[in-house]
Length: 148
Image (cartoon, rainbow, N blue to C red; front, side, top):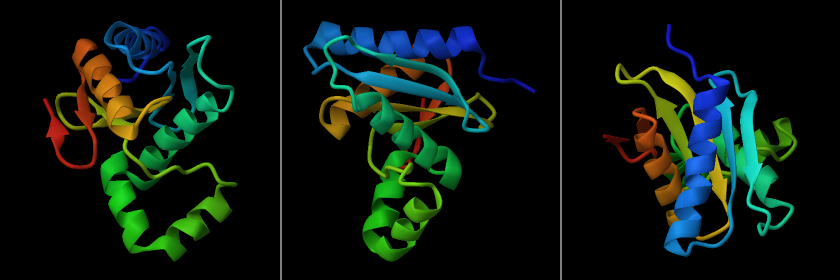
C-alpha cells in the first residue's frame, strides 16, 4: 500500500509556498497530513501570519475527517450548519470546511493524506495546493471532482 512519506509531504508543502511566491499570491502556510490525520509537514512562509498554520491544518483535517475535499465540505457546511457546529465542538474547532483543503489520492483513488493551504483567497490557496500535488505526480480531490 502506498503511503505519503515525509519527503513527498515536505516537497508538496515547499512547492505550494514557492508557487505562491512566484505568482504574487499572499504569503502562505501549508499543512500536509497523512491519511490518519497526523502532520508530516507544516510550513509557514516567514511573512505569513501566525494563525495560518492552524488554519491550513484545519482545512486538511476537515477533508480527512469527513472524506471530502474542501469544496464539498463547504457546500455541506452551508446546507447543514448545526451538524458542522457539532463537528467543530467534537474536534475543538479543528475543522475548517472551505476551499484550500484538498485530499491527496494515488492513481487508484486511495486517500494518502490531505493538504491545507491558508494565506490568500480560498481559490488561490486551492490553486497552489493543486499545482503542488500535480508536481508530486499524485491526484488532487477538491470535492468537486478528482483533478488529473
